[in-house]
Length: 197
Image (cartoon, rainbow, N blue to C red; front, side, top):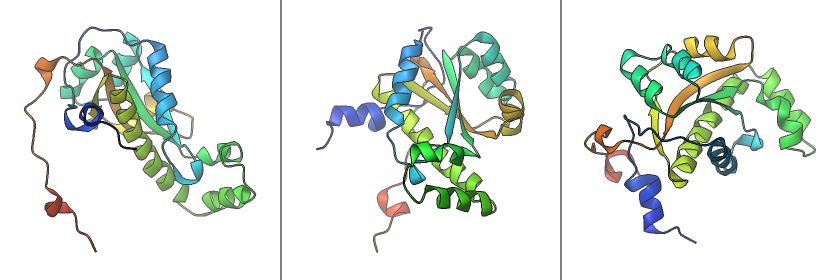
């Protein structure tokens, strides 16, 4: 079954990256609803390495803004919430619960013993989950403003010090102010970047 064109417009075709925000509250229940949608997206062995911090309080937003490039600081402060999309490099500790099949111990052993495998897997799958996050947020009627202009090291020190969690990217969410939207930029065509073999 295919979703309607209006749904595709909401999620992809007419959705825009936001740079300014309306002063509209986003309830905690909406954040839970976003997660309850995005969690169904596929990850390797159902590993679900993503970890999310929703910076909603003024102190938390200021702490995050201090880790961002100057041009992004005001966006973070103005947004109702900015989410840190992060990943746990030891996500496999939850796998007995999330992948309760006979071979799970062998899979965990593989992640522990193969140098770099756990971290690259966590980064890749948390990136996927970050995309699911954006889709879920838009599907629930909110706007997104993904940001990569920040210091991962500073965010990790400020929010995840002493843990096995690392930041991937950040994404402001809320109800965008159309006055802050840039003119739509072009996208490459299918023939420019795709091939069928």
